[in-house]
Amino acid sequence: MFIGEYKHILDAKNRLAVPSKFRKELGKKAVITRGLDNCLFLYSMESWKEIALKLGKMPIGESGTRGFVRLMLSGATEVSLDSLGRILIPEYLKKYAGLKKNTVISGLFNRMEVWEANSWKNYKQGAEKDTAEVAEKLGELGIY
Image (cartoon, rainbow, N blue to C red; front, side, top):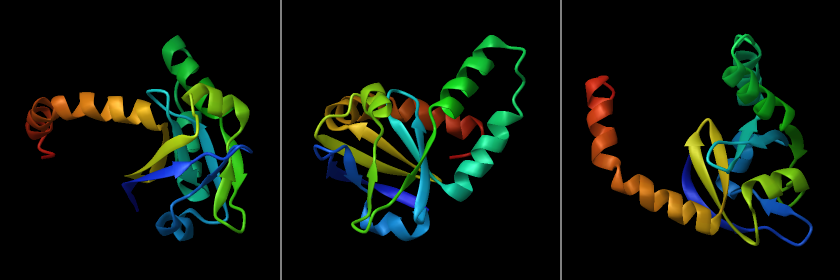
């Protein structure tokens, strides 16, 4: 399980260190793809297979679903962790997420999200303002 928030540096060669506490569960190979809200999603191979299977079974008759599946699957690429626990972020994904030098890697149960540090800060501040409203909705669903 991936949990927590970690600040890391994207080096000049587009390499990003995966938090050391996540490396064992992630394994030697992983999949990174476009995420939501202009971040990147990083999955273990096992989790990615489950997600990709679900995406592949979604109905293609609806344009919104079709577009979402296209972006997630076509944007995905397999990455390998090097001996220092770093992955190489492809240029197209770096551009999509607006990654610069400072990044944040957030653990979210079955995936990690990679954010440009200022984008994460802004997103988090907005989300924190909505916490009470979200908790009420989750309570209505019996989740919280």
